[in-house]
Length: 457
Image 1 (cartoon, helix red, strand yellow):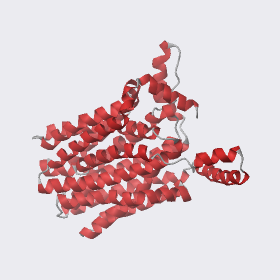
Image 2 (cartoon, helix red, strand yellow):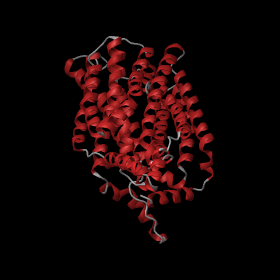
Image 3 (cartoon, one colour):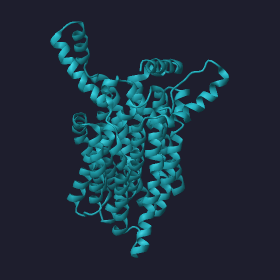
Image 4 (cartoon, helix red, strand yellow):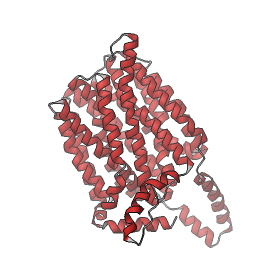
């Protein structure tokens, strides 16, 4: 999402100035809802990075093996899978604000509960419920940002959202590594002990709650009220008949583009399965392969996430030069061999270099992929598509970690990386199969289409 509206200047010498403005000025012209959502995204990023670093480590400290930890890592995704569509309907029925406020309250409660229990059943149950209550963010965030931005702003705003979630939020890795170290010194225990790691999980829960407080000032989107008004107009016009009734009925009967949804969702499912088999267990891989403690582990992944988040801000530059689809598929193809490199790296520095490169490329296409998907469907179906993307993410990050954990326990630590690489070859291949015609279009054609769509707003 570019950070400002695309304003073409006929004068060539003003082109560079125009491009600079497109990255700077919109930051001060965004609606209040966007700022509030970006604040919560920042807290969500801290929560995810801290909990990812400490939660699996905490379960490992209880004596559980990678196979169980893989299932444990999959439980939030399974919870999100089951609840994504109902939560979407609930948000449409009672409004998005109360649903987001509720998730800001309940997510930290169940996350903290994960750090207080030790039995397999309770661990899996708390992780499952944490996924159920946190799914509202993933279902509503993307449509809200889409509705609050213009076509030319979207990639820039999505990039900023990704930077806050994955870049600034990656500082949580530093905290996730430092907090157990600090508590270990205070309590005179090992940083890898259950007690020390428990405080790291508590910190993750606290970030979600504190950064969720501004959600109380969120305004309900006008679209919600408009939809209710439209329903009344539909009923009245049908009763009165006439040309208006016929036109409205035609619009109301517009069917969901199932075929298009399938083409968009299947590649994403394969992509998330490959990512889930590797990313969800990446910290555990470094612990088992290189025997790292929380402190060094936190530093490694803080640098990775922060640098990658900064790199994601360059996404609009790549989109200006190449089409969104070309950037997405090229990066996915290049990520596959990087996964093999990480999984079979004989030394820690080589594994770190591979992980940093993989992370940079992955975070780069995050906003581009989101914008590409949203632009394939009409406004009427974007929220629905976002809900289904949440479902594919949930399936991918439930099946992926489960397969990855089983492979690491029964085949070898590197086996999950081979599986992930295979998925990341299939995903772009299917995207090219389904949308390859877009690669043949010059970048100017796509730019012109974006301007036409924006002028219609």
